[in-house]
Amino acid sequence: MNYLIRPISYNGLERVEPLEYPESALREAILNAIIHKDYSSTYTFLRVYDDRLHLWNPGGLPEELSVEELKKEHSSYPRNRNIANVFFKAGYIESWGRGTNKIIDACLEAGLPEPLIKEEQGGVSIKGQ
Image (cartoon, rainbow, N blue to C red; front, side):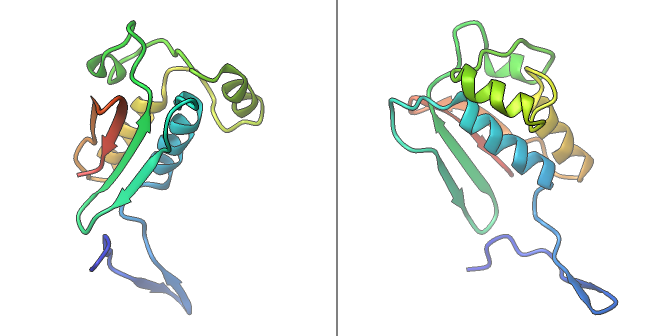
């Protein structure tokens, strides 16, 4: 299996291996998963396929939000306020309700398609395409 192979280059003697997806998008997706996870449920799953990544997190969206609303300016409803507050104070997140926008923007800026975000199987998934 290839597992998302990107061309390797060299900067002098240093080997440079670019990530398939922007580091900022991956970071934001993982932080969102931790902050919004339903901890009374199952695990968060990250699956790596030959041609895509798929992150699934237990716990549906709050009734105030839809997937389409996640793609524009929206409020944040962290399921785990204490974790969200610690991440905010530690500087891991700068503002509330911008994570999905930052993921989409980073992918588009890298020339990748917009990731597919949807509610499925009792949780929220994001798939890089």
